[in-house]
Image 1 (tube, rainbow over the protein chains, first blue to last red):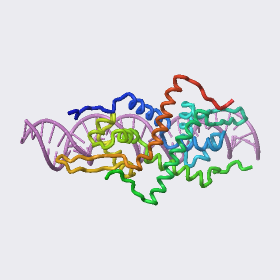
Image 2 (image 1 turned 90 degrees about the vertical axis):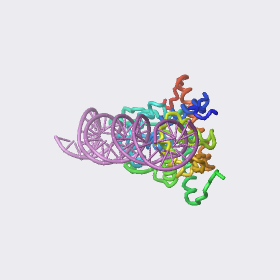
Image 3 (image 1 turned 180 degrees about the vertical axis):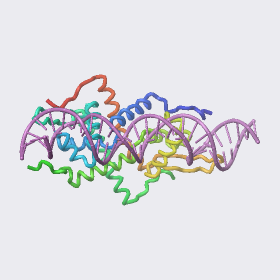
Image 4 (image 1 turned 180 degrees about the horizontal axis):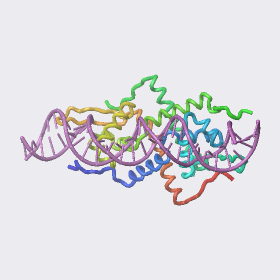
Length: 127
Length: 127
DNA sequence: GAAAGTAGTTTCCAAAGGGAAACTAATAGC
DNA sequence: GCTATTAGTTTCCCTTTGGAAACTACTTTC
């Protein structure tokens, strides 16, 4: 009968896929990561206060927290310059640049989503 | 001097990008959406209890909530069959299939991330 | 009529996410 | 010495997220 088997989804490839998505989502979750990365990809080296002004609506606490998280995950680098009032430069690492395809895919999908709201073409797959 | 300008990031293209990412993230955020979609993409038509058994660790409440959210956003379809104990079939819509590139990119990136943890090749972009 | 299976919903609760504002610490300018 | 700017940190507080378990409602089976 094979009706109440708890798991068909138990193949190793599925579990790897599951874990990969969990890893990525853990690193990229939150309201601000993509916006910070996007701004940094556009602006190159930027300082804390620059980002605070550029990333619309973000509070200092969140910016600080998110930058730390991004740094820990090697997506952005943090460089302290010994200028008189110390300044700190943030920059997307080469590794962080590998996120560009994801950000682009998501932005593309989001843009299409908005368009679909207006064209209102229902895309049903059921008969 | 142009030092304290609140916004350089104010061009229309940037704002559109910002909004597109916000739209997509709002629809795709949460712990379970990608897992449900992934399972449905693999399994085709599935019923509520099937998904409850297949998506590892999810509770009925969450599955119900996430499926509603996905349905509202036209990513999955919900079909009630008038069998004796009523059954409901969920399926990824054609529109939902357009998320495959994103899911694949994220899964690929997550898999690479794990590999990089072991090879430990630091990818600093600063001098 | 009790048990089990269908598809959920409801309640209760803890943890995480995130915002506003105040605060630290150092230095430079007035 | 007061203020402003740098880069944050800390506190307070509210909302959202998400999990466990109980519950509804209907039907079939025993």
